Image (cartoon, rainbow, N blue to C red):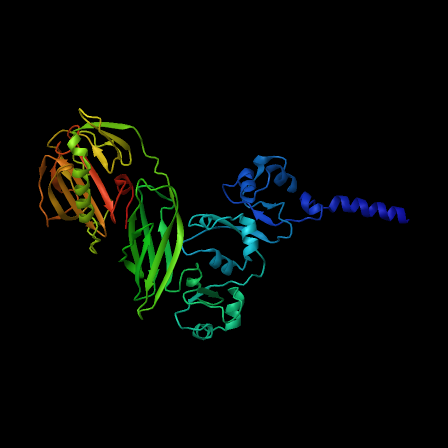
Length: 470
């Protein structure tokens, strides 16, 4: 009888047993990762620094192509780690400290899971793995202490207590708070639950990440009323201008020759009471993938630094001010849109060039700071957007030139014209004829050179033809 009962138990177990992944069967469970759209076994294995074979074995996967979104995978090699892994994109305002405080993940565990070896790896747009434990407290209120304000005063002002702030923010004690530190606490104000930005910042966004060499960064910040914004991107000061709903916008060009990598963005807020809050983070800058190989024979006088440098400094001075008036309202249009023939550019922004001094051994390596449109002398040049003329005259290298201020630090330059049809002070409408194509200055033939400056940096004008900037 006993043997029959034992056989029945074994048979019943065989029919009802739900096999677990191999690691779980071996008594070595791992944390769970939920497969996201676009994931593959190789990308998941790379993210967690495990082999594809180990990942397949741990989850009894025989077909690497059978992966589907929502599938739960055990991640081997992370014994002692529990919970479900979530993938988070690092936003403007996130940092090691703020993400750990918001998710309540211990710093050593966070570094172990993400294999972090350098702070530069934690930049805006990076993807980080965060373990989520059931019952974790949601922290959705931010507060920033001011100089001379104690943790007790900060806690009272925000309807909490010093023990709670110390606990959730991993402080060593109530004496461990420092001025300017952004602390998190549980609360009802979900609008503040976004990041580790100081409390004066309601939201922050950089559009179009990662920013390319020669690209234009669009930085949008929403703040409390009465807040004045400043800051810098790479090494250029940011100029913010108000738009709707308390949002402020800054536009900043990125140089075409800057090395790829991560660079700092710093945000500074001056509150209505005169107190200040600031934040700094890294953002990625990627390759613009520009062309190479243009060799242009020119008059050696026109590549002499004694001639080119003063003219370049003159242009930088003209295009440096950030006018608070925003003249343009729509997407920019090609200044060659009224050509009778094709308006496709004949030479693109960012292309590397070698200027060869005719009859000499002089050679200058440079790059193309705008885009060229072909065409014969006398074709009409039109304003790509509304603005005000701030320069109209002759330049040695650029020939007959016109510069239009579009506002907010955005300028258009038009070189080599045969005729200039505007003068300084004129307010120009989009599509208005401002001059005629020519071959004046340093050229190999008649054409229109159009370049765009954004807060002191020449950027790729094609970007402004392909999308609307605020």
